[in-house]
Length: 284
Image 1: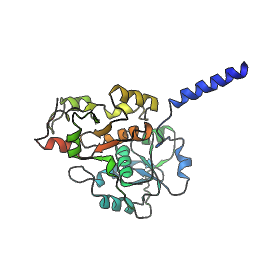
Image 2 (image 1 turned 30 degrees about the vertical axis):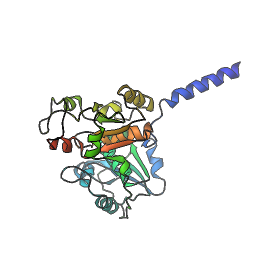
Image 3 (image 1 turned 135 degrees about the horizontal axis):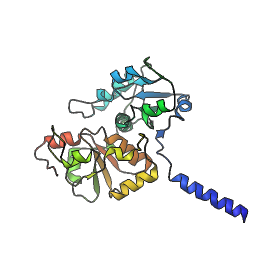
Image 4 (image 1 turned 45 degrees about the horizontal axis):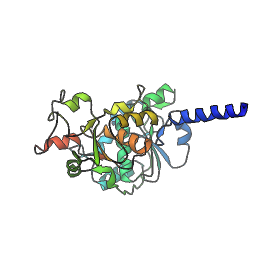
């Protein structure tokens, strides 16, 4: 009887722990030092150079995510992105860990870019720089420069939604469109430089809703409940966007890595592109 009770308690604890499992592509500040000791591993700060130069994790290189976009904030052609990555010491076969100041906006964006480009092993530091500092880990102002390499791109079109596909997805039961902006942006109550509103039929799940108050990604259990409540199910093709789709990246990770959704895309043109064409309707 005693053994049975112990086995039951163990099983119960195991079930409860499974609900707290994080995305396989998220790594904690505690885990990172040992992870970086592995061969062929590189740590990338996705912030602007001015912020990197103020303070960054010791040993991290800097690739400003903004350098990978055109004037409309859409991703540059794959060969140009690959050239920038290789120039800064990153190739597709490395174990790549990304971080930002703690918002997960910029590391999330880079996660989507690298995944789309064909990088085989990409992770995000949970909670970013703030989590690292809270763990009292080493930081510096001294830049790290990695040896240039060659990034061989294999872009995966399955991770990108075009304007034409978004038009097809509107009111299509096989799709669900997620607006990752704030409720005010979604409702058109605080935008000043864009047309007011959102893409028709899109549901609003602010990107911050996938994060805890400390900036860490929520548990798989919490993420599953969040998306289920909004009607986001695995049988549908999910398209995510925000103003420029920077905020869409961490949600791509949440659905693809944490919840194992099979069909997840980012609308790279985002609402900026959509609203720029007056023939595209917007809803309030």
